[in-house]
Amino acid sequence: MQSKDILIHHGLTKTPCRSEMLRVLTASGTALSEDEIRGSLLVDFDRATIYRTLRTFLDTNIIHRVLLSPTEVKYALTDPGRERSGKPGHAHFHCQFCSRVFCLGRLPVDETNLPDGFEVREIEIVLNGICDRCKG
Image (cartoon, rainbow, N blue to C red; front, side, top):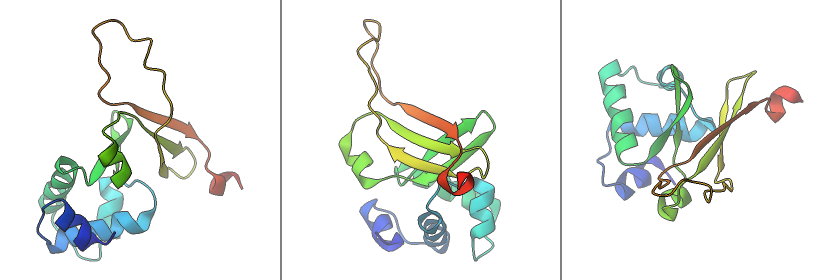
């Protein structure tokens, strides 16, 4: 799906920053930090514009956060299938050599052992290791 189509699907107007950030995220094939996104932009947008765009993309579920540590966050495009499924659960693989983060999709998780009254709303799993490119 092209950036224009993604924006239309989510009811957003096309702006230069939104289009450029979607271009970067789509081309990356991996989750990116705010600094990595900013470094890949062809246009120099101010930090506030980038922050507002990330916030808008998060609020509309165009992207999702991948929390690698309390101080390290990356952003990845949300798979339209995940958006429609309504099911909790999403896994990522974080390469400890190159720092790339890959979306793995839903992993089966046993939710039956929860105490009474608990309800799962979201499952985020980050697997840490070495990706195929770095291991090769």
